Image (cartoon, rainbow, N blue to C red; front, side, top):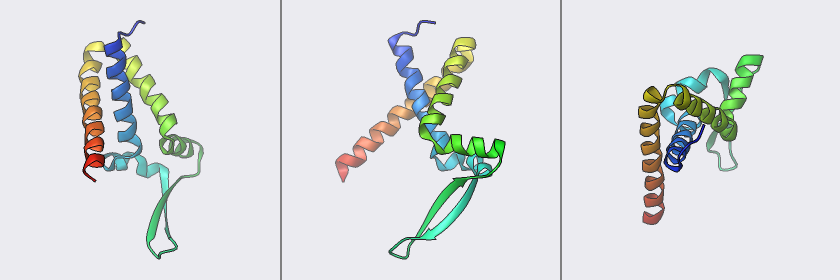
Length: 117
């Protein structure tokens, strides 16, 4: 189980992007919704703030806790991607490359936005 430096970089970037996709991105909100209660509160300025609290229950609570923790989801994403690559490299490679390229694009966009403002 020796990864080259390039493979490690690609898998790392893919894991970063998959984790952000699952935990934060709007497009995967439908995956998170069954596991969270939405709570709306007013802040000191009278503006609404929305909080997501993991639902009660063994399975829903566990998955809700997992999806609310970037670090936890990152571990499971990394395991999924590494095992997929080791067992089915021809199937996993396109997914890894797409996620890695998307990660680099997201990083570049973040840097560009910081330089502009």
